[in-house]
Image (cartoon, rainbow, N blue to C red; front, side, top):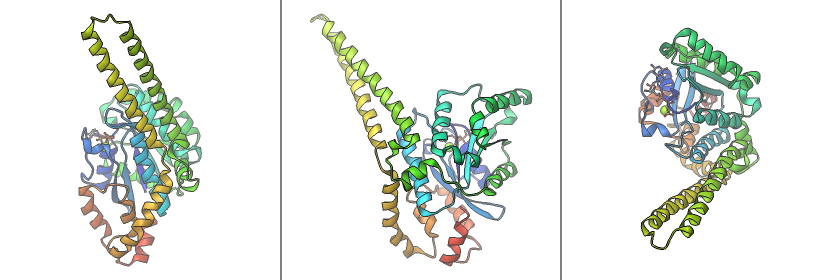
Length: 330
Ligand SMILES: Nc1nc2c(ncn2[C@@H]2O[C@H](COP(=O)(O)OP(=O)(O)OP(=O)(O)O)[C@@H](O)[C@H]2O)c(=O)[nH]1
Ligand SMILES: [Mg+2]
């Protein structure tokens, strides 16, 4: 399995569609693009499951929701025994600066991986056709010397993607030739049985949410104070303040819910689900390889990927033990 990450609009879905050779996951500003999706692809003679992930973009979904979704998939993949070959981190070279969302996505991503897994990360710049070569090289140098310096020091590889299929396949091959990797988040959730907020990535998101809650609480206190100081007859203003107060309280409650979502033992939950599904899945064998069936509990296989999946199975003898070997390549 290879996971594709990056901010919203970085080109994750475009990359996956390019490798697949057809549109299997939605591209562009599509709401469906907010969800994780798995696409079976073949690179050379190797069968790989390519996972699309949403970028951390609060305008679409909360950080806690996105992290939970990514944590579930990574825990399931690890618990089921699918090999993780690496991660492709996409970044548009056309971006003038690192936005807050980009900094956050990179920070969370580094914490998901942990230092030891960074050698299985490809830091990929894209959209080279839309930028002057000199300007692009200057930005690439900045990335190398600043934002990505730590990761490169820990063994990540900096490389370019020119938007073409052979280029995408070459990037995939680069990761497929590496040893399998286990991420910090997977160890913490599955091996150690921690709650998501007790992992380094979860703590980062939780700290952000706690900060937000303090802001809302301050705003509510200020509004209460204003309300007390208002003259009795200033009814219209009082009503407005009351409405603002209700809005802030609703935000506070929502943020509390998001923090609650992080206090889950995602690794154990996933293992329970897998256990429950396993017996059901075996009924369908040898028609559906067990690991794909199990993974589909946690990650969506988009409509277009179904044909891809069938084609992917072509030439595969329908024998479970042989299928198991094939899926070791995930
Ligand atoms: N020509 C070209 N277009 C690209 C490339 N990468 C992305 N695009 C286009 O840029 C837009 C955004 O790309 P997506 O692949 O949807 O971005 P994403 O990272 O999946 O975004 P989210 O799913 O919202 O997180 C789409 O219209 C793509 O077709 C590229 O390398 N070349
Ligand atoms: Mg997408």
